[in-house]
Image (cartoon, rainbow, N blue to C red; front, side):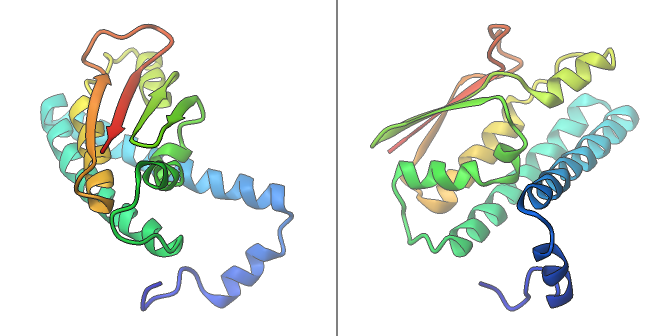
Length: 179
């Protein structure tokens, strides 16, 4: 996997003692915390420098994160070079972003797949704080495109809808992956 183990032996032993349901709750809490940190950093940058600057920084961060995460998942799950669409979507479903999206729908085909986010915690949190809808299309597009292309450069990612696009109330964003 890598030169550095993920967690110490003691930490792994401590976690293996947890019941499966508690371990899953703990796992999802850690993913949620990653996204809380991301949101807090974004809000801090946005407050100090504006939405445009915060979004520009966010795009760069998530483009790099996509490559790191795709390569890590590829190693962990022993996926070879240039996987097919179904395998890419399988790895994407295991990404921190997708695991933090409980309200998603995924259609997987042989050469085309579609991922839809029906409710978005980030957008709902912003609206709940009285903030405007975040135009997240460049951030999410950069992440999803780099994730897929890191695994297989022949994959094309298209945005079907994502803010600032007008979207139906029951769908925040929708992404197409195809070879």
